[in-house]
Image 1 (tube, rainbow, N blue to C red):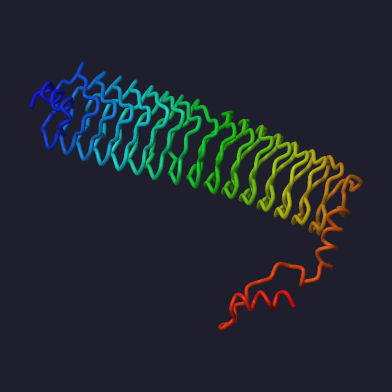
Image 2 (image 1 turned 45 degrees about the horizontal axis):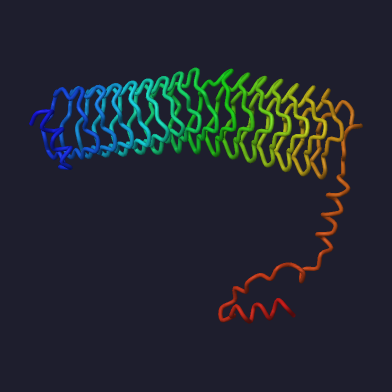
Length: 375
């Protein structure tokens, strides 16, 4: 079968099944809407080919050339595309499933939504990629190179990114959910409205990074560094921040509720109006930190060091203060009157005013349980 015969069959709506097309030259052809099944395109030249709306299932595309090809709304399923060249291609609404893309080149690819699920992208180059929504689910990304890419709106889910390269990348509304980024260096880079829920960021370097309104809820960041980072309005709820260095960072109005900060160093950090409810700050260091209107209600501050910190209406309502060091306590609010009154009211509230609980005894009907609650 010749390339022209392939084009003729595609235009007739016929499927290309189990064909040997190794090394063929398809340049200049229009193969849009093609259905290619179990066919071998190894080493084929498809530079600039229009493949819009095509589907490749269980095909061989290894070492093929698809540079500057139109791959909009293409679907690649169970394809071997290792070493394939796709630089400069357009990929609007393109999807890759269970596909081998190791050592492939996506440099300069442009697209709106590009989905990559359960694919191998080891050593793949995605330098300078521009996509409105690049989604990686269960992908292998060993030494994958994203240098200079616009990863705005990109989503990485359960991805191992420890060896991925992110130099000079743009991150806006990017999501790294349950990803392993341990040991990565993001020094001086900018993250805007990004999310790292339950991610492994142990030992990560965010020194002097901009992290505006970023979410680190439940992340493991022990041993990491945020020195002089600009992270106003960020969220560290429930994060493990043991031994992390936050020296001189700006964290205005950030939320640290239930965070584990044992041994963390927040010396000289800007923590005005931050919320540390129930945070575990045993042995943490806050010397020279700015803590005006910060709220440490119910926090564990045992053996923490606040010497030289700026305290102004800093709440420590029901906080544990054994061994805590202060230069002076004049700016502390030891008891929040409104909160204390709310606690007192809750303690006085009769139990019969609470919502009824379902009866668990065998043989008790829901109707009987409701009657019991109304007595």
